[in-house]
Image (cartoon, rainbow, N blue to C red):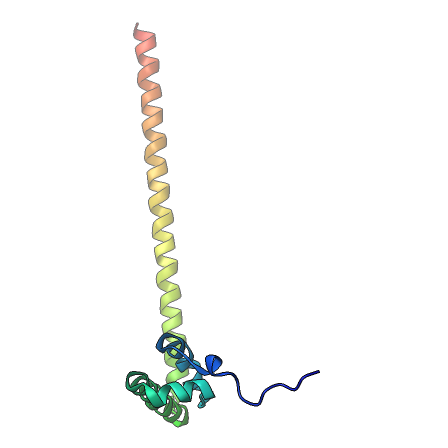
Length: 126
């Protein structure tokens, strides 16, 4: 079995700007670029600038991970109260919706009964 070459053939090392652009987000997250990407960046200022932007973003995001926010002692109570208010509002809206539906149905039944009564009177009169 032939040994695998230590370096990929030149055609394998060449990346287009579009190919590199697809690799940059994952490379920024991982913090490393492959040989082909580094070779492309050496010769392409536009891609080098884009890679620098991703690198700055990666550093900023890493800094955010370190920041901790103390929610304070009242946060849980405030969240639970907001949930209770929302549930009450939903319950009230459901009640109003049901009452409106019942009123509409009642009006429909009353209208049908009135139509039947008129038709019956008309048949009896005629």
